[in-house]
Length: 515
Image (cartoon, rainbow, N blue to C red):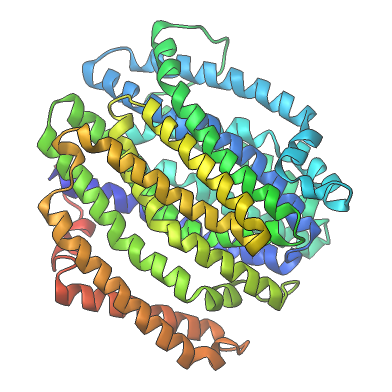
């Protein structure tokens, strides 16, 4: 029953994340139509990336990864889990309040650190203004991440997964109102950021209160448990910082090409759909499950959870990666080509999307392997691996920039992602049976790969056949649906014939079971 509950957790988070990503497409399509890849769009993307970058640095990929295993252990052993969560909430809120104040005051320097190519033109002043308005988002969304960790530990995945849905709904509503009333779209987007953060925090706080955790800010105190949390989280925080340095290098390279920041952002948003749906679902559900199994000495159950997580990841990610590479241009054209969008924007964004697609399986599999380390409270080795990945990313980006321009940033992201995955896989070889995929995983891996290749061939043929309709304004949405449908049918059809998945797997994953 445990693997079924695990898959149900993956699907719960994944489906809500899918809903968020679909709404995210609507949001990005509106932004592309209103702003295109112009200076206002680039300024806002840089400004909004600042709190998001630091959020990942402080909360999602670091503090929370250390918090969840310790919190889950205290719940399991009957220790004072609520006191620990309250101390962590106070400590994180105090640090974030200081970071918010300092970051807002230092915004001109932060913008230069993110996009030095903006210096001397209108994009710089707009990015500074938008950044000062929106930077407080880091305070709200980082506390949301901690509260989501509490909810996920209790198995309340739906509430935490609704948070990004709220963001996209509020952004869509704000842009529609601004368009109707003639408001400045850049300022509207900037002010929507902190408003969204307040709504997300209020929703998550009420959800946590319902499970008995009404956490409040206050004067932090350094308890032994909090000190242990910081010791464990320290390397993970640094590892998260390394990942953000990779993004920083890419932004810097892109900022010297007009429109490139927007191209990379639009492409990143699209490839984040499968990465978010699969990767976030697995990372959210797998860490608490592995923590429980490994703490109880249940190696067989831990191996089963790890193997099914990896299998589920590849089953959805490999075909997604193939699709992003082979039909990048039709996807970008149909989704974004309207209003202020230009044909050259489609070409450049499609190239970036294909480059990101190459690294998609690596980034999702990282979400599968990392819980093996964090469940053992080992955050040091992922940090060392991330440092190596950072140097690979920087060297590739800077070295290839004179050759392929802004594309170096996107391609370097994928190359460094595969390097990171290889290191994590190699480092996990001494973790016992729980870190070794079982025989079923290996039997299905090559079948998933074959089905993905066949799907790719079908997509190439279908895209050429449908190309006149994909270019027609009135019928292109239907043509894109037919194109994607041909890929889905071919993948699942071939997969069923060669045994890439069992005939009852999807029914079992989707069926609700009690107990």
